Image (spheres, rainbow, N blue to C red):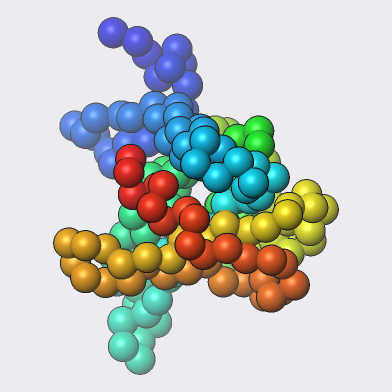
Length: 185
């Protein structure tokens, strides 16, 4: 059996659980990009933007309930942490992870705060940036359009939550093309 070193970074939920190679999430990103290029050739120079689940507190306390990641975001990136965004350049499948920039004092409660390189290695993505930089990073990539996820789950009858961030209004956004493609996988 392959060791973790041979298969690269993995997603796991602890002892006695299966470890899934992060390559699975990379393959998922590639498949959705390939399908978008096939079904919507005009969107080849677009960027998919997904928003992960948000942290919250229990009622008026400072206690956080157990966090569960947004499903489509997890499918594409395998990220466990809340308050992240992911972007995928459709033409080359290049992945960008945006993580919160936490104040140093959070280390008192959270332990060691990880740097960008940690997230890049842990989740096997191409680039990692801080969330406050999302607008400038996406702008520097000069996408023709941002593709956001918007649709209704036929099982739960609930709407997906479309990615939003400060400055998204300065981009051309298409919230129709991605959902039918990503739900096929």
